[in-house]
Image (cartoon, rainbow, N blue to C red; front, top):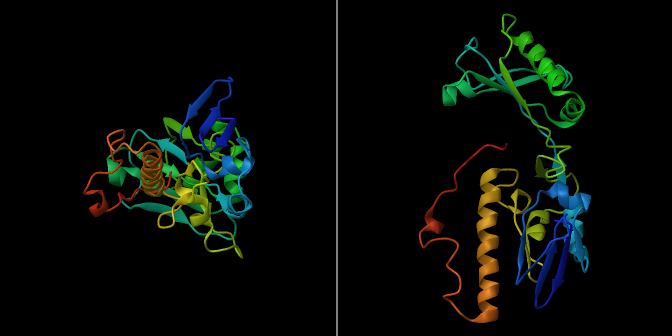
Length: 245
């Protein structure tokens, strides 16, 4: 999406190849990093309070280097790690074997270390992670497969998760969630209860869809046009807790 034109009667969304879509309303669920980069042009501009919420919320980076081994050689614990003076000497591995039965460890660098690793090739990033693992387990064998994420430089994300920056207003998540006329917002950065999580993104998507549905119903006055987004028992469900990707 490159452009969203907002009018009282509806919205027009333009994508990269020039195709346009007209609708009564739109839900914007792109990551906060994309909103910060202003790769989507809003016409007219979003209100100052909305732009301030986008600007003042922080975006963190945490990547995953997934290492698949031909056998398990580590202890049956949830995490493996070492605490050190600098992030370059700290090691943090998630043991997926304990939860899934697969011989997989996930190295999870964050902050500046994650940014620096994104500048490496996949091979160099895996070698760095493996050297960190060998500091914990000197007899570790080399991985047979790997996968490297790059959330910070991926143009579709430009970051991993939102966070409250020091000294900023406490209501930024709420302000980011509030719709602007017929433009609704969803995503983990709009969740006041579960920011930075998949279940936060999922639940705000449901809320935005329901709010959007109600706006369309108010306009047309036909209850049978659209079905409720959530069933009658949805309010009784406990959100599925899934760790941040």
